[in-house]
Every structure is written in C-alpha cells, then in structure tokens.
Image 1 (cartoon, one colour):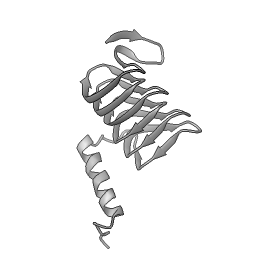
Image 2 (cartoon, one colour):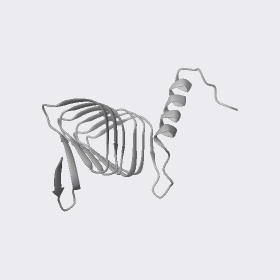
Image 3 (cartoon, helix red, strand yellow):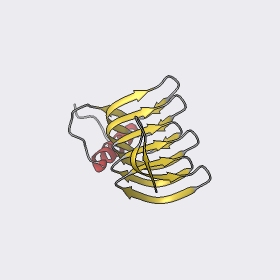
Image 4 (cartoon, helix red, strand yellow):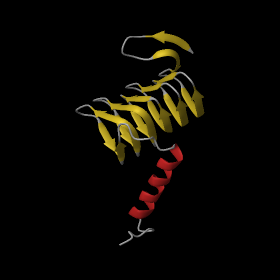
Length: 144
C-alpha cells in the first residue's frame, strides 16, 4: 500500500494491482485502489477505484468514486461519480450518484444515476439485475 496525495486525484492510502499482476478474490478496504493488471472477484473500497487503461476487472465493485479507463465486467455501486474514459468499457449494470462518459467510452448495461438519492445496497442492484435477466429470457412477465 502506498500513501499518495494528489490534487484532483486519489488521496490517502492506495493499493496498486500492477500491470503484470493477476488477483482473484475479494478486496475490502478503507483506502483507494488502482488496477492496472487483472482482477477477478469482488471490490469493496471506502475510497476511489481506478481501472487503468491496461486494467481488466471482472468483479462486483462498490466504491466512493470509480474511474474506468480499461475494462470492467460486472455490477458497480458507486456512491458519488462513475467516470468512463474514452478508452473505458463497462459491461454490466451500474448505479451511481453521477455518471460521466467521455466520447469513445462504452457502457453496455443498465444504468441508474441519481444524484442525492439514497443509495441502494449492492444486493438490491444485483437483485434488480437478476430480475432484468429473467425478464429478458421470458421467465418473468410484466404485470399489466
């Protein structure tokens, strides 16, 4: 873990998954995380999460802010801002206080961006995603 303080960037403790590192499992912490390598599993950070251009994440992510310049496959619950850079790709359902997608950035999935609204739990987002998938497959009918 590194201690970094940068104006307009990540402040406080920073955990780094370097470009040549593969991690499988759950990461929980009070600081921030930067992923430049491969990560599969679960991320639950009180601080910011940054997925660098070379980063590949296949996980459920919960964080204060999330910046994606690489690839994210999975669900995300972001308390404040989700930013998808021009090189970023997100495949999965996301909930965020605010959403910013740069030209060239890709979001494939359902998005709920509601500033000031009380956040839903990760379980609620996953339940909604499962319901939407069942509905898409025809296992659930609309109530009319």
